[in-house]
Image (cartoon, rainbow, N blue to C red):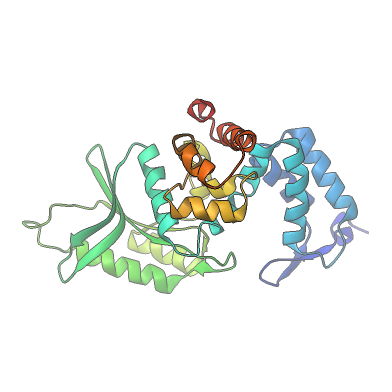
Length: 285
């Protein structure tokens, strides 16, 4: 009997069934920053106990719990995709987060800018300039991890950018070199094919293969506060409502943590976790 046939079948979040791939689990743990031995130990533990019919969420939950016991920073990175979903239900915190990410990358950013097109005026979620380069981004935030940004959305975004690109150059004060469609989930294959053909750039959770949303978050060290394991969900929601979106904002907003009746020792632990995750010394001050 082959090793493949011995692997249990697991149920994905969208209801489809696939064979459990332990190497994929181990790779995702190491990608999040788990050491080789830690990733191997977690993989072996789950591989030895997982049965057919288990859900991917159950596997994630068990891996996350074991990883959190070893290193909270790696656990926070491992749960990053789910942390983005926790930023909802509206898309405004995600828009703010992406704008901050572009700022970290050296862009001068304007949020929700009005730009006149040939036919109508458009509100662009993120408008950014850097060294003579101009980009505008339309953001699509989804609460459902199974939802994929599809061709219909890509067509809609292309139509908006076409109207801006065709504006009267004598009146246009905000040129755009690149039009971006950005989402916290994935794209359908049709949306990707159309974007490549129509010169719209895509940025999603795992697209493109290099420099996708996950890669850029890790590279900038800009993590949403929802990725912290020591903050409760209700606390995260209250902080986001007050404009505290990313971990590095916490040090300057200790008063907001105190206002939530969080004890001083727990505030210290939260800031320490944020510092370890973001690699920012200012959080520990």
